[in-house]
Image (tube, helix red, strand yellow):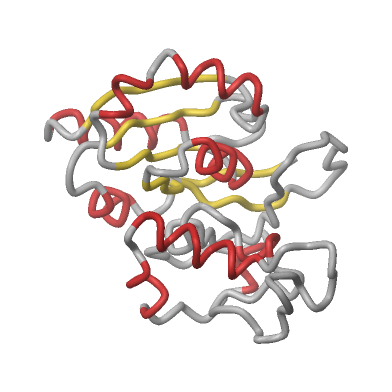
Amino acid sequence: MLITKLKDKQSLLSLVSGKAFLIHCHGCMELSFPLEEAAAVQKELSGAGKVAGVMTADYICNPENLRLRLRAHMDEISQADMVLVFSCGVGVQTVASMLEEMKVCAACDTYPLPGFQGLTPLEHDCGQCGECYLNLTGGICPITACSKSLVNGQCGGAKNGMCEVDPTMECGWERIQRRLAALGRLDLLKSPTQIRNFAAGGEGTKETTTV
């Protein structure tokens, strides 16, 4: 179980310089989902003529379901400059893995909810850290893709592209570098990363973040 909260509204609006294709995931909304806030962001973007299309689906973390749903919207997606995803981190990563040539951004931060988390076998994982860095790392989570959960670049211990902690695991930061290079956004690696707020993963008040 998890809690999904919308990122700072102004930071979201500033992400969209051209047109965006919006994806809303309602799979886990019965727990905690910023439905009204997401609708308000969509309305404001639509009013500014910045919405190329909208898709709403259940459980976009399911690759087969997502692949079929995206197929029906590819014309709209091709007209967009980016994809803005209203879901937990798993959904954002799943979308990014299928739209490798598109800029995919997270509209939400994900927080843990005490209790049984479930054992659904998914390709991607979300650390529910409360500060989603996916907008800075090309849709690849540095918390779960890196064995050390480093958020400011690789440790230097990778060998032949594989993690020094788990030799069977590809270095997450090398994956991030390749993804950003393909998107023409290597400049993001030069941006200073915020000091991680570990309290954000708890139940306390979260400070505004711009990632």
